[in-house]
Image (cartoon, rainbow, N blue to C red; front, side):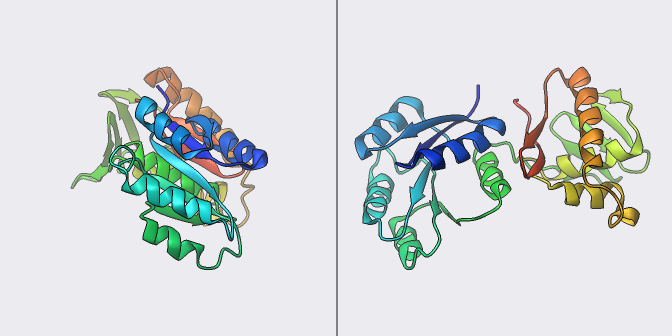
Length: 232
């Protein structure tokens, strides 16, 4: 079941843009508007978070945020505000209202996705053993031998795919840009490597993992990059 995110906005373009980004990243999206509608949706569906579209001079969003964070029925739901440019003291007013996070537009979509994945519990900490093994859920990667295991069964893959997977698993939920992944897989040739080559290796890695795991554990975030974000 996909995590539900409510988007509060009167701007259709805002909803289309951010709704698409979140849908591609594996979230269920729903558009809401009025205070009572937000409260009913929170009580009925227990969303992962509420995203609010905030514009300079819009005092209604401050009142709505204050109301949501002071009501016993809604205060526990994370509230993130995406603030348009030239907002002045709106940031301070939203902080005083008790919102959980603020992003000033424009910003990199992976910042919002990483925050949401953390709230969804996808960003569970990976751990590295004394022998250099990286453990993330049912995955275990051996640094010295470049061997990958899922539930004790080995997944054979070439070194480049191993390096890409290790980077993704080390920070689950984080969206890595192609440039970051190039620096991971080809550090000695990062400046000369075509970043689009990452897409080919990620496609091969994704197919290989899907055959062993049974589901897609790598998310593609358009115009941003890739993230380790399993459905389990």
